[in-house]
Structures are given as structure tokens and as C-alpha cells.
Image (cartoon, rainbow, N blue to C red; front, side):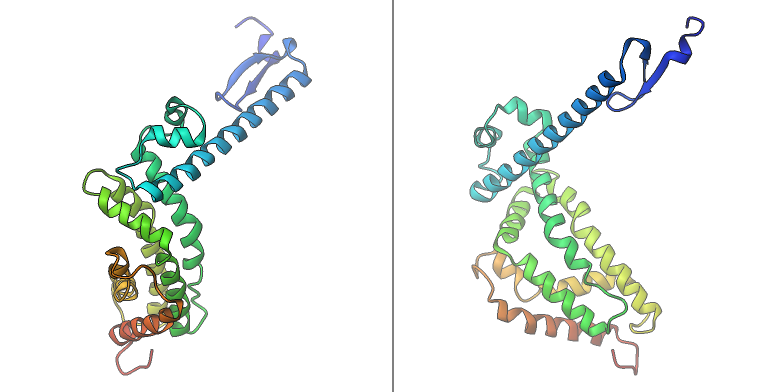
Length: 244
């Protein structure tokens, strides 16, 4: 490096990490304009990515995973397959993106209903009703059918489980762990207890929906289903000789 050049170098990290630029050759207006262009490009890129995900989600629900092609998605997005592959390396990756977005949009609020400061039974019922209302929505039932059909052929089921249901079970387990510490539940493995509660909540309705025994659930049926599930759960996990 030439003597004195170091004082005129400015690090730019907006796009490529630390890049040394001779600021004597660049006006502040030029640097600002370049930074704005980078931000605009990022915004445009994210908007395009979201458009692809939303379009793919609709196509997967309409045609199913197996019958959906990247060409079909590209045609509906309005562009080429090459553009799609700039954002997603495969149909599997795009499919996972759609279901993770759906899970994040609809399930995060459900697990926030777990309030350790509320009465235990009330908190479990509030959570249980929101949980069943969400997983029994026709669009999520469709997603679960697609996942089950595809999981034997690829890793999409495993990836979704790790980023969706597993995280939810861990949040529920953390809630139950606090109630165990408070003496409201008997000492037990909280994660196993979480699995038991989720299983009880799903037990009366999810399988019939997935197998099209029922096309949908009457919302009025959900509260009594949840009441029965929570009752059984508390009978199993309540401290001995103590009401739940």
C-alpha cells in the first residue's frame, strides 16, 4: 500500500463485506446513492421471493406436491424457471418455504396463549381451542396431506417437523416445566407431557380430517373436544391427592 493511502480508504460493507474504496474518487452523494440502490435491490429481491412463495403455496394446494412443477409456478409468477432457481434450488426447498411460512403465520400466536400466570386448566383450554381451530383449517389440513404424501420420497417432512411442530412442542414443554416447578403438575418429563397433550388434542378429529372421513369440523365441536382432552391430561399429570 502506498504511503498515505490508508487515510483515504473507507470500508463499505453493505453488500460484499469490507471493501476498500478510495474515497478521494467518490463523492458522499455517490456513496449515498449506491447505498440506496443496494437497499432498493434487496427490497425488490425480497418482494419477488415473497411473490414466488405465495404463488407456489396456491399451486401446491390446488395440484398437490407431486403434480406441481417449477414450470407451472414460473408461469403463474410471470417469469422463467431460471428466476425461480435463483431464489430456490429445488421444488422441495420451495415447498418447505411455503409450509414454514404458513406455520409461522398461523401457529406462533397459538403458543403465545400459554400463560404461566393463568389458572392451569383455563390456560390449557384456551391454548387447546386455538390449536385445534388452527390445525383443522382446510388449508392446513391440505398442507399436512401433502407433507405425508411427500415425506416418504424426500426430506421435506423432516425439515418441516424440525422447524414447525418440534419447536411448538418445545414451547409447550417449557410452559409445562414451569407448572411442574410450581407444583401444579406432578414431576415428569415436560417434553413427553407436551407430546401427550398434543396427542390428546388431536385424537378425536385430525385423522378423520386427513383421511377425508370429514371434510371439515363444526367449530362448536372444538370446545368439548378440548375439555375432554385437558381433563384426561390433568388426570394423568396432576399431583397426587391435589386438584389440578
